[in-house]
Structures are given as C-alpha cells and as structure tokens.
Length: 302
Image 1: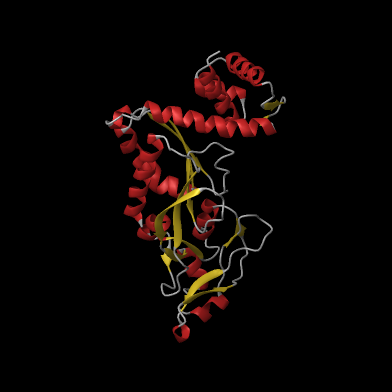
Image 2: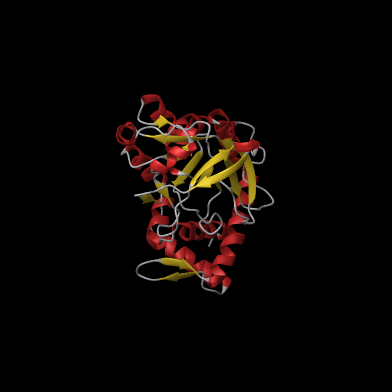
C-alpha cells in the first residue's frame, strides 16, 4: 500500500462523505477506494469512518487523523511546487467557498483567464449563504462578506463593499419612493434572516442628526422574509420591499433599471471582505496564487 496515495483517497472520501463520489472524482473504481481506506484503517489500528447505507461520517479518530492528514498532504504538495517558477508548473485541486452573488457576478466570469494562466489547477467552487466549516469540510480558503466571528482561522482583509438601498419599479409604482428617514414608516422591506423563524435584520443607516455619525437601525414592516441572497434580490425585483445589498452585487440591475437606488444619504455600513484559511505552517503555492488573484479581483470591484 502506498501510504500517501491511501491518505489522499481517505481525504477525498472524508471531504465528499461518499465512497462513490470520491471514486468518481479520483477516477478510480469504488472497490479500490474502499480497499485503500480499509488498509489505512488496518495500518492505524482504528476505524476512521462510520459507514451506513445512507452516509459516510468521520469517527472521532477520523476527525483527528483527517486534520493531520490534510496538513501533511498540503506540505507534500507544497514541496512538489517549491521550485516552480512558471505559472503552468502549478497543479492540484483547490476547494473554495464564497457567497453565491460574488461567485456568479464577479469570480466565475473571470475564472477562464485564471485557469488559462494555471491550466494544471482544478477548482471546486462552492457558493452558498451558509457558513461552511472550513476545516471539517476540507476547504482551502473561503471568501466571506460581513463581520467575522472568532473562529481560530487566519483572516486576510480584502477591503469593504459599499452598500446601496434598492427597490424595483413595481415597488415604486405601488408605494412611491421614500425621500427621508421618516418616510420609511409608510414603506416595507424584504426581510433577511440567516435562520428562518428568527427576527430579520432591520434597516441600517448612518445617523447624521446632530453630527452623530453613528449607525442606527429602524425596523420596517416585512411581509416576506428570506434566507439567501438570490431570493433576497428576487423578492426586491418582485416589488416586495426595500433591500440593502453591496453595490457591486446590484450593479447590473441598477444599470438596466431593474433596481432603483433610494435614500442614498442613509446607507448601511460597508461590508468587510475577508479571505479565511486554516492556521497552517505553510500554504500550498497554488492556494497562495489563487488568494492573491482573488484579492486583486476584489480590489477591482470595491
């Protein structure tokens, strides 16, 4: 048994939580993947995975081994590219996560240019509004918009996205355009809550009364509350209320008239942009190169 190859197979099974999907992604027969993991478990003298007909899940020993295994394989991959001086020499898989809107509007349209420069790199791009577990789910890095919690990960600031208040022509036709803060009492917003059933976020604005210059909140009526960015924008397009979004994510709709900007003097605070990655001694060069590229890309759209 090649121990490094067995560890690579195990890592893939752990990340995908499936022997079948791991086999497909590695181009190996499912039986070979299963045998490789079994041999690794025999070598270590412990069970790494719980297997049922419905799912594959890491055991406690598997969780500990996966973390060390992933770091070791990353170090090996870094050694392989240690002296690579040409872009084409980089190779390997990248697993990244970012918000849906950023992936759709900013990153994916520019990916062909990145992959043309680095044809040996394969990218798995997850786009979701939920906060993925970077370590447990095997991501090399994640791009997050908004305030960060203390997660023990390394955070690299990429600046901020300015916010904008938007409504649709359908909304304006029914309710008109709010011109002042007090006008909001007669208006409604699209509610956004990370977890449905909890209180949606209020309308946030910069309070300049008496020169205070602090951010304040106002709760508006919300007939519809959603829990993801795409539904949030679509609800606005349907005329269901005001939304507050990064200006970059509403750029196309503002240009084609699908969105109308309102209350420009009452903007929510800018949203921080951050890259998060595990606290490792070394990052594979392909991860460093991708994060540098992503950082430059974000500067273009700030």
